[in-house]
Length: 92
Image (cartoon, rainbow, N blue to C red; front, side, top):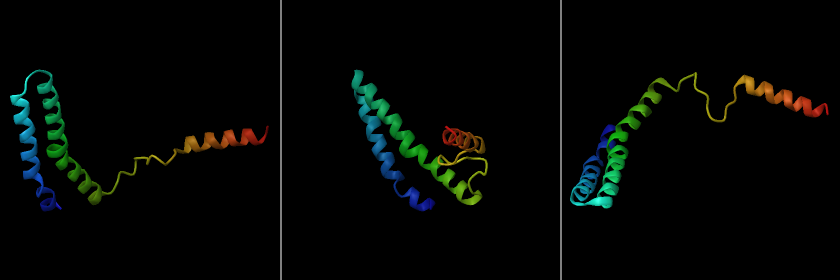
């Protein structure tokens, strides 16, 4: 998995370096815009790549946390409240 991830690193570094060079040569609002793009590209393509891979590897090795609730799961308290509301509607 790591070798596959590293195949595109050189190209991404060259691409980001091109933005950095353009930002260094630019002036005014264009320079600010290019520096923002440069920071976003650096964070997204170079830094986050390793974090995302490490997180995926951790989840695959250890499994997901038992304490986390998936977005489609409801806590027992919420389920009880919904049942109470449904019963109240039926009794009307």
